[in-house]
Image 1 (cartoon, rainbow, N blue to C red):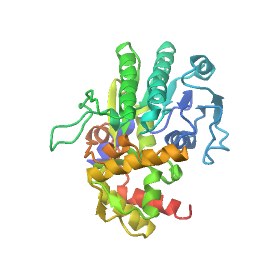
Image 2: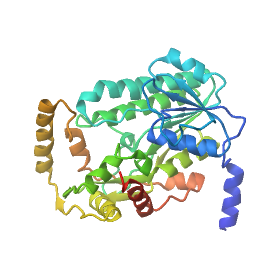
Image 3: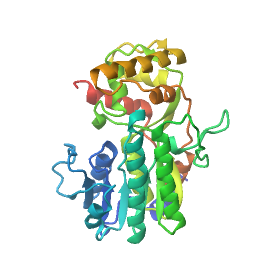
Amino acid sequence: MYAIKYLFLRAYFNEHPKKNEMILVTGATGFLGAELINQLTESGVKVKALKRGHSVIPQSISNNADIEWFVADINDISSLEDAFEGVDQVYHCAALVSFNPKDKAQLLRVNIEGTSNIVNLCAENSVRLVHVSSVAALGNAKKGELITEKDFWEYDSKAHSYAISKYEGEMEVWRGIAEGLDAVIVNPSVIIGARAGFEGSGAIFKLVKDGLSYYTRGATGIVDVYDVAKSMIALMNSKESGERYTISSENYHYQQFFGEIAQGFKVKAPAKEAKPWMLGVAWRAAKLASLFTGKPAALTSDAARSSLNESLYSNEKIKHTIGIQFKPLRQSIEEVCEGLKNN
């Protein structure tokens, strides 16, 4: 039975990109973008990659001869036109991630207006698009049920700006699809991987490594960056269109997540629960401290609220569609800890 299923999937999907397809990756210097480019070029294809003028190319792809770099800004449509010349496929990874309320205007500009520019250029040039959204753009499931692709986000006055920006950005893609754009959307959960260093999700690893004492009762989905990129490539080279897919390996409560990170670093696991009122005091204190230091607050109100949410996701649709077997999360955490031990 497994052999039959495997042969069917091989017939339905191209496991590797077609070598005659011209591929463009936005957000190429980011954590996910760099991993995606690694997988694409390892399969023997050349790619066009977008970077902003001040962006630093990650070491993992800095000497890759199969990359043609373009300096462009997704909010400047004129700077994108040369990069789009002759392109057949676009992976839109570029986005701003922030839970700082001060970044609201920039979040909306990059994640909505920038995505709109990419959608318009893809439509004008008959280019197939894989858009990276987020589980933050998904809605809430009924109590006791997993969140699926059918759960659409509903406006919430308390929602953080990042969620709003990703939802509205995704709506730009749905608008394009309604107008005839050939596109699929991926909604990854928390993406982890050693090459993130201590930035983004890597900041959680640093907190635990440095002796974090508290955990929250929240929960979320987590996934290895390798599996996200792998899923994106499989979807791009499938016949799927006008669909979205949650990319998530497993659901973890933060206490379990922090505990396994602590095991990986061989440090004491957080043992005290951070109550909501404690987080309220903490983010206000962090905000006050930032006024004196001039540095961004170590904890924001949006991040504090997010850490208390219990959001559990279903990955059945992506598993059924491309037959992916996700890397066990415990293995991913061990690999990240091993890669960051000496940092």
